[in-house]
Image (cartoon, rainbow, N blue to C red; front, side, top):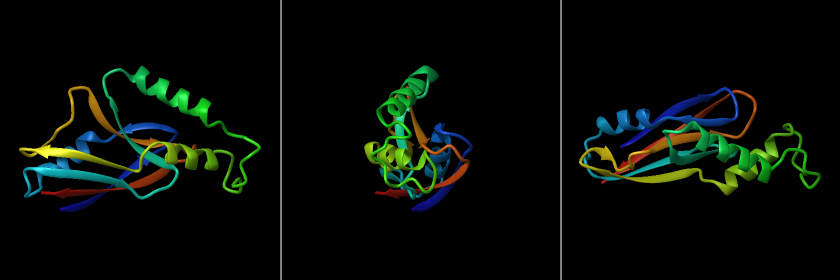
Length: 135
């Protein structure tokens, strides 16, 4: 089974879309296997992270922004704005794909785990995630 979903991100940050993946998986013929999520973009990423306390996500964002600041004089790729090259680096340091086991029709996520799109650009974007479930 392969599905595509679109996620609208109006700002930098983490956007949870766990329930959308759960919905897609619930309609699959396969009840066990591996769910692969693949982001078709180079300036955003995917993340499994705590979904209970928002401060954990804020701390992650603050840490990554400090690690990869805008305006570094080493950047040559600057024509698309000051946030573009840092967004590419952030995506390279994180992940553009995730694999999650599916057991008896359910994602095998832990109690506090959610699936997030991590938008690294400041301008509003619509991102596409490919969901592939294999048995």
